[in-house]
Length: 62
Image 1 (spheres, helix red, strand yellow):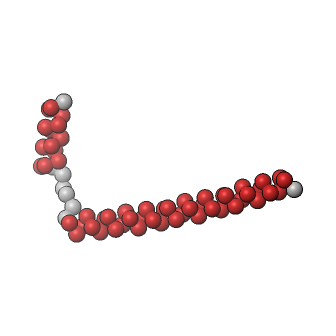
Image 2 (cartoon, one colour):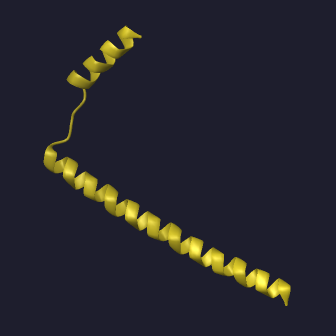
Image 3 (tube, helix red, strand yellow):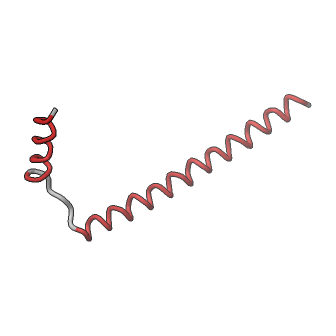
């Protein structure tokens, strides 16, 4: 276990290319915008299906 942690630390320290601060900020904005767009899409689909199911049950009751 200690060997795994040591090697993982060395890998992160020496072989990973970390983004610059500006690049990290840009990527954060991209992720935030994509998350909002995806949330709105899911909300829209949920609303449509909710109305369709409601209309279906109203139709069955008639």
